[in-house]
Image (cartoon, rainbow, N blue to C red):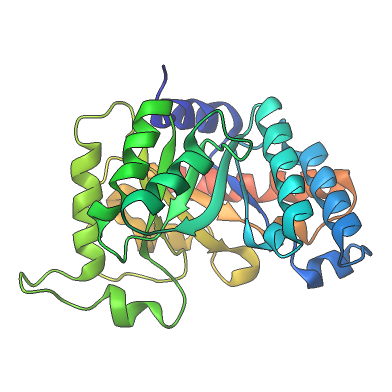
Length: 280
């Protein structure tokens, strides 16, 4: 069984280093001329799948924007995940779950067990009950060839109060998370399956990402203010492991499929350039 790290490495080599989010905000549905209801959600999701599923390495549905429509919205999410994976895209389900014991094990079963209708290739997770509390997710990922992206350094203004706080050993909370994930990925080739989420707009925070040996998801590019060139400042020598992530910058070009594909091609050129230049 191939690990998520192996599959991600191959997907980005074949399709390019890019993740595109599916974030059906009410404002975005309106921009597309769609109603803010189940019909609009379905049309939006189907259009994104048709435009991008066969050409983008990773697609990241934001679960909350489907959940707000209840069970029928979750059914649309299930269908979207299935169609994306059938077309060859890796699906990173943005759920940011985090808990302890049997609860986090249930989350792992819901999102990482292939028998679940919500099974994705990888999920996002919150480590603020302790990185060790996420062990059932890591175990499920290892058992089923999945991945987990753990929040480390986020771009929201409230984040630094927690993430930059220092423990008794002098390390920040974020650096502790980074170091623990680095241990989980030790020795993996060509890339570990446990990644980190590091905002593309945070600048140089002085944190060391060089030993992570796993994928580094960089949200916040495009409409949220980050540029591909910013990646060099944020990630430094770890740039080779970065997976740039765009949402509104690409989705805002819809609803025409050709326009969505053109926007995707444009940001992919920017990402290739930034990552290649930085790697020299």
